[in-house]
Length: 157
Image (cartoon, rainbow, N blue to C red; front, side):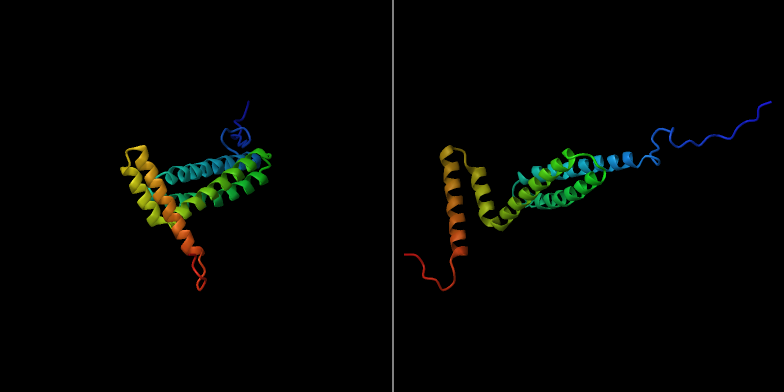
């Protein structure tokens, strides 16, 4: 006569249970981190191309991507994923940092940039576009000239 045995609780054979496999858990955390990081970089890329009030969102996305990218690099190194994932994320983090700097520069010259975007939206011809660009460059040069001019220094003739 056979007695019924107690149900086996073999955690290693049940699918989806990774309590016994810390390597798999770490790899899953890294892959989720790369996904979130990629979405943040994509958000920065997307919002950097919008007109000015929305362009400021690129700064937020870029800062988030930069910081989260460093976190993902640390996760990837701890999970021993090899050099490809950390290098890819580091390149993306520096790309996000660069986009954040560009968006910040656009925020600094907000009035000039806003006027340039308005001018471009109304420019229909190549000559109109060129006029907008020349006006934009002239305004930027004037602004940087005022910023670089030292107080008390004689002005150029």
